Amino acid sequence: MSHLTLDDVTKIFHDDDEGEIVAVDDVSIDIEDGEFVCVVGPSGCGKSTTLRMIAGLEDITSGEISLQGKIINDLPPARRGVAMVFQSYALYPHMTVRENMAFGLEQSTDLSDGEIDDRVTEATDILGIHDLIDRKPNELSGGQQQRVALGRAIVRDPEVFLMDEPLANLDAKLRAEMRTELQHLQEELDVTTVYVTHDQTEAMTMSDRIAILNDGKLQQCATPLECYHEPGNLFVAGFIGEPSMNFFDAERQGSTLVADRFEYELSEQTVDTLPDTTSLTLGIRPEDVEIVDTKLDDHDYDAVVDVVEPRGNENTVHLSFEEGQVDTFTATIDGMHQVEWGEDVTVRFPEEAIHLFDTVTGEAVKNRDLSSVEKIESAV
Image (cartoon, rainbow, N blue to C red; front, top):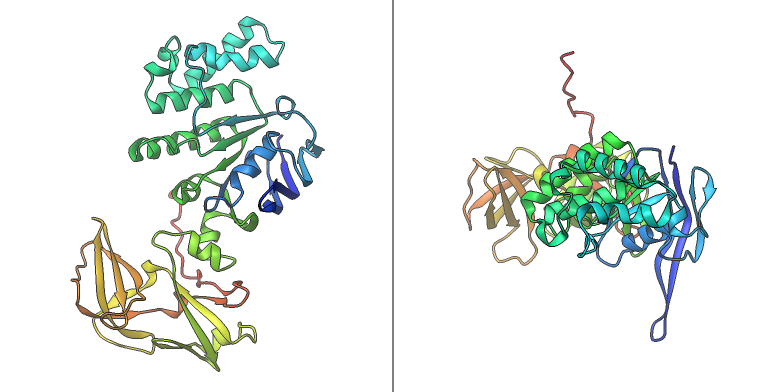
C-alpha cells in the first residue's frame, strides 16, 4: 500500500539578486494507493521541483510529505521507497543494459547476485528488452533507452514511481506508443505514480487525476474530464484543451451579458445560479462553437473566417466578428465541412456549452451542462 500525501508543501529558493523565490507554494495533494497522477503546468510552475521534493533531491522549506502516514521529509532518497525516471534517461554509457539496471540494487540493497539477476530478468521481460540485455546505451534507440530507464526503476520494486517528463526526447509517434505502454505497465504493476509533464495530451490520456500548477500554486486536482469540462478557474480552462477555450469579457446587465462585440442573453435557469458579481468572462471551447446556415436565436452571430487550419479529420477555424478585427476566436469543425478564408458565416454559442467565470477572481461560477452526455452501455 502506497498512499502518498503532500500537506502544505512549500519550497523557497534564495537568490542574491532577486531575494526569495517561491517555487512551490502550499501545495496539498492526496494520492491514493495505485493512483496515476500527472502534474502539469507551464514552464517554471514548480512541477519538477515538487517531484524532486518527493524524491528527496530538494529540501522542503515547510510542510510535510508522508508515505503511508509516515513523514519522509528528512529521509534520504534511498530510504524513501521511491524510484525516479528522468527525462535524460541518465544511463551509464560504459555499462550494459544488465549492469545499468542492476547497479542501483548492488549499491543500496543486500540482495544476492542471483536475486538481483532475477529482478533484472523479470523487468526486461515485462518491458520486452531481454534481447538487448548485453548492449550498451549507444547501441540502443531512444525508445529502447527509455525502457532501460524504466526497468532500472522497476527492479527497485518501489512504493512510488516518480517520472519527470520521461517521453519528452522521443519523436511524436514513439511518444504515443510509449504512452500506451506506460499505462499498461502502471496498471500491471499497480504502483502509485506521479508523472510530471508539460504535455497536456499525456496528462489527459494517461492519468487518473491531473494536478495543475501555476506560479507554484495548485490550481485544481481532478480527473481529466473534470479539468476539461468543469475547470475550477480561468487558468485551468485556458491551459487544458488544444485549441484553448475562447474567452470574452462581459458586463452582466440583468440577464444579459454585454461584451465588446456581442450581447448574450442568459436563461432564467442560468441566472438563478449566478452570484451577484457583474464582471463575468464567458468561455466556450472551440468544438462547441457551431457554424450554422442561418440565424435562429439570440445566441447566433455574424462572423468572418480569418484563417482555416485543415487537420484531416477536423478543421480549426479562426474567426472574427468583423473583417480586419485583431481579436479572433476559434471553432473546431468536422473535416468534411469546408469553409474558406474571408467567408461570411453564422456562429452559434449554445448556452448549455458555455462556461462563466468571475473576471476579477478568475473562479468558475458556471460550467458547461453535462446532463446530456451519453454513456455507452456494456454489452456484457
